[in-house]
Length: 381
Length: 240
Image 1 (cartoon, each protein chain N blue to C red):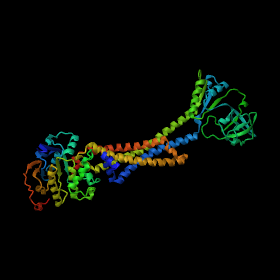
Image 2: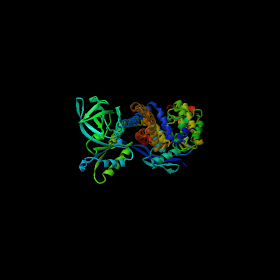
Image 3: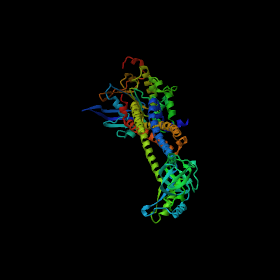
Image 4: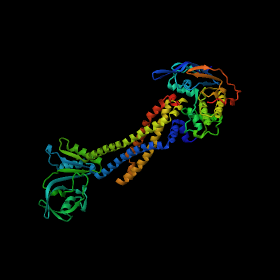
C-alpha cells in the first residue's frame, strides 16, 4: 500500500474529495485559478511593497545614520561651545563628530555675485565627497563649492572666488546630493573654520556607521547636554526614516488589501462551484446519508474538496508569486534574491493561508446545506 | 423474533390546506431470512413505508422497533448509526457513485469508519454476486444488472440484518431482473437478512416468501403464495 493509499484510508473524506474534484476538471481548475490569482495578487503586491521600501531606503542612503545637534535659543543658547563639542565627542561611541559654523555670505566670481550659505567645517571629508578636485580631511585653506553653485557660476577647482572680502582658491567641487541631507551642500560653499570671525558653532553633525548607533548617540547627547536645562535640540533623521518606513507599512497594507479583494472574489467563485456541485450530487449525498454516513462526515468531505481547491490554488499561486517576485526584483532593484527576504516569505505564507482559509470558509455553506438535507428528499425520484 | 417491526404507524403530510395520510395504522414485521414483497400501485404509500422502515423518515404516530428496540425517537445521528449497523439499501436507480470503482462503491458505507477488513469484505461480496472480474470497473463501464449487483453488495457490506429494496428490478429488463431477484433469495439465507422490497413488479411474487399489499396507505397481508418450484417463464405474460 503506497503512502497516498494509506493517507486516503486514514482520511476517507480526502479520497472522495479528490475524486469529486476530478469529475469536472475544468470547473475545479477554474475555481482553483481564482484562488491562484488571489494568492498571487496578495503575495506579489506584498512583495512589490517590500521592493519599493528597499528601493526607497537605497535612495535615502544613510541619512538615518546622521544626527544634528543645534543650540536651543529659547533657553538662551545661541551657540555651541568648544566644551559642548568636547562633550559630544566624549559620548559618541562610534561615528565622526563634525562641528559646523554657518552664515550667509556674498560670493563673487568675476562679475557674478550671489548670496550663498557658507559653512565653516574643519573636517568636511567625513560628510562629503568631491566630483572634481578633492575634499581634504582637514580643510585648512581653500574652499569647497556645491555642485549646483559650481555649475551656475562655472567654477572649477583652481579658480579663485571671493566671499565677502576674503579670497579663496577652490580645491574641490562637491558631489551632488539627491537625498535628504542635514547640511545640503549643493548651493553652499564650505570654507575652513578659521575663516569665521565668530567663536562657537551653529550646529554639530554626528555621522554614525549605523542607524542604531546614531540613535544611541542622540540619546547619549541629550542625556549629557540637556542634563539640567534644554541646552540643545537633537534632530535625528532616523525619525524621518521611521516615518518613511511607517508610510511603506501603510502602503503595503493597502496593496495587500487590494489583493485580498481578488481573494474574496475567488472565495465567491468557490462558493458557487461547491454549491453547484453539491446540488448536482444531491442524490449521491442522499445515498451516503442513507447508508450510514454521518452529517459531519458529509461536511468534512465537502470541506475537504474546498480545502483541496484552496491548497492547489495556494501552491500554484505561491509558485507564480515567487517567479513574479524574482522578475520584479531583478528589474526594479537588480537583486532577485530579495524575493526570499523574510518579509516576502511571510507575505507568501500569509497569502497561501488566506487562500486556504477563504476556500474552506466558502465551502462551509454548501457543506452544511448538503449535509442537512434529508436523505428522503434527496432520494425522491 | 422479528428484526424490524412497525406498530400502529401513521404518516401524515401537510399538503397545502389538507392533510394527506400516506400510512394508516400500518402493522408490519419481518424476520431475518425472509423475503417480503410490499406491492401496490404508485402513490399508495410504498416509498413512505420503506423510508420509515429504513429509519430515513419518522412516523407521525406509532412505533418502529429495530431488533426489539424502540427506535422511533432517535436523533439523526443515532438513526444514521443504526442505519449503518443494521440496514442496507438497494435503489431502483442504483445510485452508485460514478467516480468510484465497483470495490470502492461497495466500500462506501464503511468508508468513514476504521474497519481494516472492509476492502476484503467488499471483494468477497463482489465475487459472490458474480463480479469478481469487474472489481476496478467504474459504474459507467457496467451494465444495469451489474450495477444493481454492485448496489446489492454495497447493501450487504456492513453485514446488516435488513436489506430494503426500492423497485430493485424497476430499471432492469425481465431477464436481468430475475437474476437479481434470484440473488436476493440466495443471499437472504446466506447472509441471514430480511429482504424487504417495495415494487409493483408482479415478477417478485415468485421469489418473495410473503407478499403484503399496500393500497391508499392501508396494509393487507396476502399470504405466502410464491412457490420456489414455479418456473419463472410462466410469468412472462404479466406486463409492467
